[in-house]
Length: 291
Image (tube, rainbow, N blue to C red):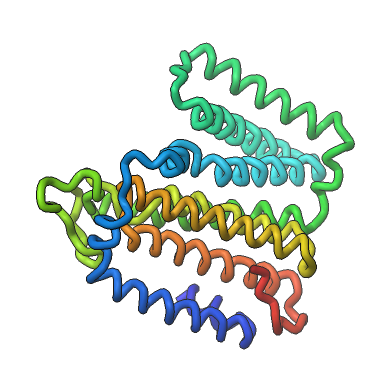
C-alpha cells in the first residue's frame, strides 16, 4: 500500500514518464521469456577483458558513493552535538570505516589481508574521518541541504535494491548462472520460475544494482545545462556497461540485469519525489523528475 501511496503523490508528468518506462520494461521482460538464453549464448565471451574488469571493479563506484553518503550523514550529526547525536555520529563512523576496509579489499582483490592489516586500515579510516569532520573547515559545505538529501536517498536506495531485493531474491530464486549450466544448457530456468534455495544466485544481478547506485549523484549537479547532461550520460553509460558486462562474462542473464535496473530506477524516482513532498508540501511538483 505504501508503494501506491508514493505513486499517487508523484506529479502527472512524472507519472506519465514512469508509466511509459514500466510498459517498456514489462514488454522487455516478456520478450526475455523467449530470448534470455539465446542472448547469453550469443553474447557470452569468457575471455572478454572489459567484462572481467567489470566483474572485478564494477561494484566499487557504488560502494564509494555509499561510503560518501555515510560520511555526509556522520557530518550532519556532528553539527548537532548532544548525547543521542554523539552516539549516532560514532556508530556511523565505525560502520563506514568497516565499509572502507571492504572497498579496499575490492580494489585489491588479489591481496590476502591479515587481521592486523584489517585493524590498521579500519583504525586509519576511523581516525581520518573523525579528524576531517571535527578539525577541517573544508567539509563545511557538506552541511548544505542537498548533500543530506543525497546521503539519505543513497542509503535508502542501497537498502532497498542491493541489500533487500537482490540478496533476498538471489537466495529464494535459486537460478543457475549461465556459466554454471551443464552440457546443452541443462539447468537453465526462465526468470519467472523460482527454483527455491539451490545455492545458485543468478537472479537478480547484484553488480548491476551497485552500478546504478551512482544515480543519486544526479542530486548534486545543476538541474540543467551541459554539465548535467554529461554527468547523466556518464552515469547511464556506467550502469549499462556493468549490466552488459555481467551478461558477457556469463554471470547473469539479461533478465537478471533488467530486474535490478528496474528496481533501481523505480526506487530512485520514488525516493526523490517522496523527499520533495516531505520538504515542500505546497510546492508544484510538475516536471519534478530529477533524472
